[in-house]
Length: 145
Figure (cartoon, helix red, strand yellow):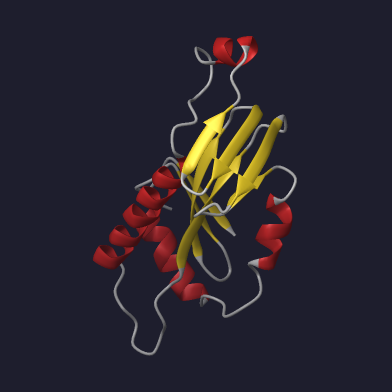
């Protein structure tokens, strides 16, 4: 695994043994709900005060799809195709890094993770067809490493 923070076309990109993942991070805590494409956060006095100090919820699904597209476009333009190798799988997830984030997710169009389930998800990514070391290194160079 190689994590690139603030080096490539998006803020966070992870090269796993089997794929490349854009990561859209939200740092806020509180009650956060996602129904399909609609995101909302329970408003209360404390959450209103947080408005001035933390990043905003916005639409993480949209932000993630934009970031995945940026990574894909960069790799397509700068990474030479290797005959006989399949295209590198590119995906991503939204990560809520605050342990106080209480997520209610229903029919989300993107994968949403928090501090409790991210580790298990990343372990599962180690299974499947692996990127060759040379391919992973070429990807890392394109991403700025």
